[in-house]
Structures are given as structure tokens and as C-alpha cells.
Length: 224
Ligand SMILES: [Zn+2]
Image 1 (cartoon, rainbow, N blue to C red):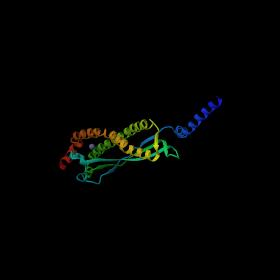
Image 2: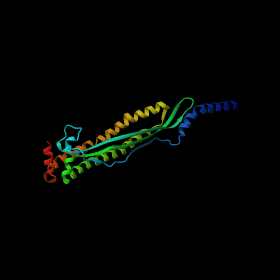
Image 3: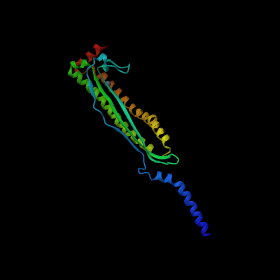
Image 4: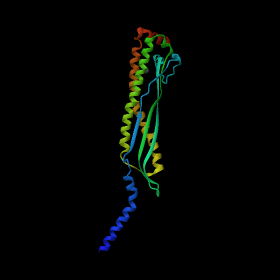
């Protein structure tokens, strides 16, 4: 009877030791959580005053003449660094890992173009420059809000569970998920600011005709 009991215990132990190493190694991972960082440092705008209004290109047909006096161009670059921090079974190639994701956002270029004609009148130049700086503020504000929101959503998602599977496949899936799902989500978060830009331009369209003793209005009419 005693022998039988011992035999049964040994059987259980050996079954456990055969199944254990992978699970145990996965449980023992030093940082048992995903690491997600979305970084952004607002950039200062460069100013280019070398072009005449007719040389300033706009990407929208609906633009009124006043928009040719100044435009702000911003391109958001996204550098993605993805790693897997985990354990790979040397026998099977099976891996368990937590994703480590760093998404670095940079605005480059952030460029304000002011029409050369504005140089004729400091009031006009200041008015249009301030208008464009409000676009810059909207843009930087939108990226800052998107950065915080995206980081929180990605952390919640990736902390749900450890990734388990073939290491190379996991890495490929992680990379395409960042590109397809999360960078698309970033675009959607940034698109919210479009209405703020439109509202600013609608207000400008009304103001432009009364500022600087009508000088800006005259300039715009001469361009139409
Ligand atoms: Zn504008």
C-alpha cells in the first residue's frame, strides 16, 4: 500500500516536471506586463516667407483667397520600435512574451508659409502669422491628446494577456497589428482636430475683412 502511494506520487511529480518548465518560465518573466510608450515633444514652427501668394500651394479646392496668404504644413512621423520580452522553449520554439512597444511621434516638418506680400504691412503679417500659430497650437494640442489616449488604450489592450506562440509569428503579428490597428487609431484621434481647424478658418474669413484698417481686405481682393 505504501509502495503504491509512493509510486502514484512519483508519477504526479514527473508529469508536473514535464509540463512545468514552459509555464514556469513564462510565469517567472521579470516584468510581467506589457510596456507601451507613446512619446511626443511638440516642435517649434519654421517660417518661410519667400513665396508670393500665388506660389503658395494648397491641398484643398474650397480654399478662399485669404488662405493663400498663409498656410501651415505639418507631417507627423511615427517611428515604431517593437520587441518581445519573454521566454522561448529551445526544443519547440514556442514562446511566451510581453510586447515592448515604443511609438515615437515627431512633427517634421512643421512649417508656416507666409506670403511675401504680407511683408509690406507689419499689421497684416502679424495677423496672418498669429492665425497660423493658432493652427500650430491646435495641431500640437491634438497630437498631445492623441498621444495620451493612444498610450492608455494600447496599454489596456496589451496588458490583457501574455502572447504565446511561435516567436517569429508573434513578432510579425505584433508589427502588423501596430501598423493596421493602432496607427489607424492614431489617425482617427488626430482627425478630431479637423473641426477645430475649420472653425478657426471660418472665423478668420469673417475677421480678415476688417483687420488692419481694411489693408488685408484690399490685398485679398487684389488676389481674387
Ligand atoms: Zn487657417
